[in-house]
Length: 318
Image (cartoon, rainbow, N blue to C red; front, side, top):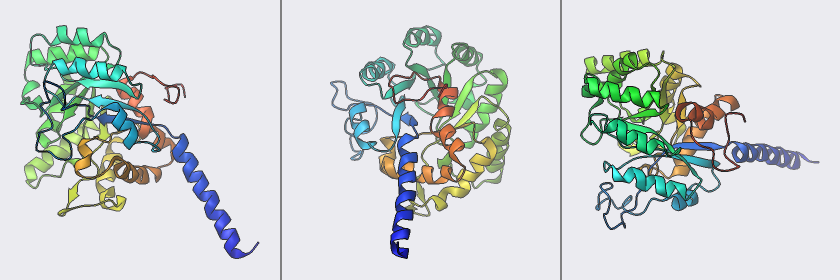
């Protein structure tokens, strides 16, 4: 065998190992959105003039865009402030086992919160709610409201999770007193990689102090979503452009508290799912196979207690 043939054989073997790792490493995408602008009632989001997003985002389309990527399940995160859309999503999810859970829209500032939660929680796919800087609500204000704290304590007692969005220093800081008051509440911070450090010194200190404190709290998770986003005026697809920010999150929260999320189809503003996933995959592979498994599915089990619905989906006993 000459040198060229030997090199070709070596490269072929290396490629085969890479393909096998990709093929057999299951991924649970913990952040997708489902909506259908063609419904008679339409949708509150996205806007009609959003040419990238204003078309049906349904499980079948998600399967098509993620084919061959190793994604075997997804958690839908509600993008509608309409209470009725919680049930609409649950009905859609029931038709396709790729959806292993939903994070709904309930307002903990409302008296009917507990009654509504009890009704939705009868469906095992309902895994929590989203609250924070969204739909004219404010976690920073809510943490000083006894009714909000009581309602979120009821959420924790139901063994459900709280996603907080969208990240800014005041929101991150508010998670500290929230978890002081409800230590058992599982909190997932959405889209932290997209949070640009504030320029103002006091705001930057507030953010860093809050993150340092939250890093010590085992029930606080961080979603590695919206990694690819504009920087210095353009979109970058090179993992090295993002590694400092990802390193900062990794160094604080470690292998056991990070979850992967694509933010599909909202991510289409910046990158296709496969490009977003490629960047994240290249980063986490430097940490080893165990870290990959934790990011891509094991930690999502701990955070969301999602429902296995298909044979190719992993479980905590895998």
